[in-house]
Amino acid sequence: DTGVSQDPRHKITKRGQNVTFRCDPISEHNRLYWYRQTLGQGPEFLTYFQNEAQLEKSRLLSDRFSAERPKGSFSTLEIQRTEQGDSAMYLCASTSRGGVQGEKLFFGSGTQLSVL
Amino acid sequence: AQSVTQLDSHVSVSEGTPVLLRCNYSSSYSPSLFWYVQHPNKGLQLLLKYTSAATLVKGINGFEAEFKKSETSFHLTKPSAHMSDAAEYFCVVSEPTGTASKLTFGTGTRLQVTL
Image (tube, rainbow over all chains, first blue to last red; front, side, top):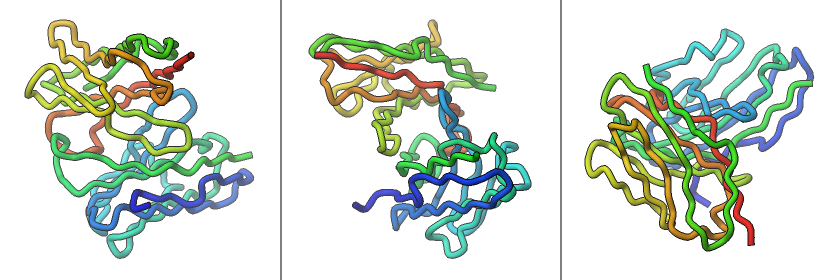
């Protein structure tokens, strides 16, 4: 399978713990996006990278969240001092073209985070 | 500012009957509009997109949508439902230019297909 892969699929953690998720995009894609999806809602934008540069961050991304894409390939999303409100599906998507009109996103299956 | 409203959270149809998933949008500019589908344990997949060309847009798996500016609608249709169409469908609005950071997703419509 040469699609976008995310690891782990599920993560259960206790409040206050740190968690890290990984996303491996399609290899030739230079843009990588992170979204968050809560129950009954559509995905909401968190941040995106073009190659290794983090170009935009949503106001949803509090200072407990950090994302990296060190070599312009895979990306990690870390949440420090998790809170119950962080419980959600975290989605990663990648694309190779700029501009919404030409930009077809390829999504991973997501990481489901449950904070107890 | 932009927003999208999916008028039904859940739609149930019988296999072989037409599908209609309703979406209204609000945008300060001429928007780009999309429909994405999310099957269980699968990533979101683009069904179709409207980007100011033809108002009737054909997508994958027999789906199509019509952009109606006067009604600010972008409803998704399919003539004959198949069991494999059962999934969550998201209507999405965006500024006509810019990156996918500008996508606004609706809350989704769960399509159930019965025998």
